Length: 632
Image (cartoon, rainbow, N blue to C red; front, top):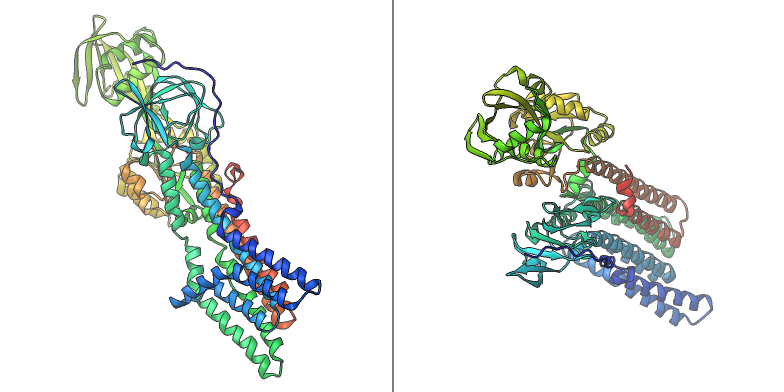
């Protein structure tokens, strides 16, 4: 196999833009046509032109801006539901019937513009998700039988080898076999600087290769890549509705029927009291417009969907709007230890020689004896020796005894690496919560290796952030022993530690407080606690399939620092929902009271009602930006 050494510099292409402009949407084009017809009609009217001409232009405005909501309203009526769109169309037609066609056309224009902005808001959320998928290239160069061939990335299979040249995007999640380069992983990890990649390192589909060439072995199908999982789960989340949205939709029908009934009363009662027909109808049409719940209906989903899309761009998969809303309601956090606060991979953390030997010599002897073993502790010892660039001596007469340890002849000595079984020499390491391994040479104790699961670098900061957000002390729930649990808890700053727990014990600990608890975990034993929690969060890389399916949220890159960020994002989304409801409710209340006890001009009522809808829609888009994620 030819080594990949090409280090030539090539221009780095930008990913294709997937953001649609406003006029790419049919709603925007129809709204623009309605506005143009309205402005022409208004110009003819103000210049004293023929009434027939400006009426014709206003009717064009009605047709271009009103046909779509009218059709949607009639379809809803056929299903025995009352759509707010239909209320607006009826009001516009009513205004034209009493000669107020200018006001009716203005209503159509503003209503169509509001609909276009709502469609644009939805499109922005969709585009932010689609842009992730477009980052992954459509083709890759696969090496087969010594020859290169260009294939669709969707056809790549696990075990295939692909070549990634300088400046290209990586076509699949996999492992570097040959070559060295710096890879821009900002689209997946959010890292501001490129990550150095060498043989054995993991790379992700859609990330951008730097100036070196890489040969990569495909580790996942295209449908299982990090990018694909983000897109699928964010798209699924967009279809689910939050409890607030479901409540609003539940009362929308009753409210709309109430608006119709109240409109008839506003029209009929003044007539009975002697008011003229035109004045009563104009007041009733104005009332129908300003009382309609358009802004209320739009208040909830845009902020939540914007938050979901933003989190998805940063490798946090929130499975539904329900989950996004629940994240912001969390009052308490419970965390698993192994694989969550720690990396889940044992590592040698201390080497204590006992007979005057050098620490490196002791580690090299132990690595020689363990070199042929597949036990996780053996891999940790060998990896520690390699990290120090120690020469690992060859071993003979290797023997492994399950539950006890291994022995082998290394450099002419019989080296055994075993459990200390209460040996005094291992007391210090065990006291610190490490797993102690005794090394003997020719039957005499030569030293102890302390092995522990390494803490994630961002664990302490994440715990601190969650404590600040919830105002409550996090709790550590683990099936590990008390010493190991206490050591990790002390390092991250957790005071409430529960150790030696079975899965059922974790569920009981989650439920005992009666508070809304978020559980972070990764293993099968964490799945029951995730299911019992108010919101379950799973670590994506180390998490089991059952855990990933059970969780409401998946941290794709296992970055604990993302957890407080997404909780904070959820809380701000919930605040925006409340802001929107206040804005919408205030506009409706003020305009309704004005119309009932005063003389609210129809154009002003239209501007106030549709203006509130536009404000609410734009307010919901504030969480789409990069600044919203970086805020913490």
